[in-house]
Length: 115
Picture 1 (spheres, one colour):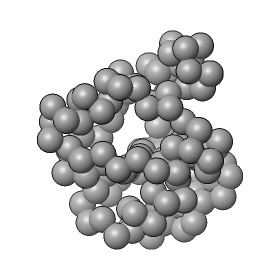
Picture 2 (tube, helix red, strand yellow; picture 1 turned 180 degrees about the horizontal axis):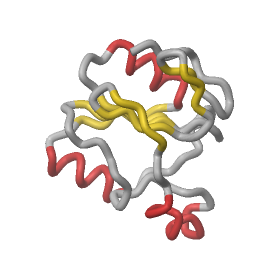
Picture 3 (cartoon, helix red, strand yellow; picture 1 turned 90 degrees about the vertical axis):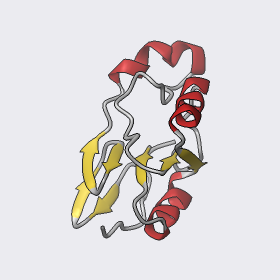
């Protein structure tokens, strides 16, 4: 998988430009469906990553890019579910997450592309 460096609001993966948050699940890229987490927005001031979303748990390592400035909150339930499943979470801003993803074979990822 060839991931180009992200700029605010976009990332290029295997020659395809994505302008919405993405989920990388066993090498397949799809749009992040945030709707299940939107109910928590008022509590966080931003739509967080919640355990209600379709998180790609089929991995040993899940890399989460929290945005260019690290602004996407992650709910405690996500950390708890990762621990329950034995999945190592690596949480960092999206630019760092892309670098981490390039080096981590077999890792899945969720990349927030703004804030």
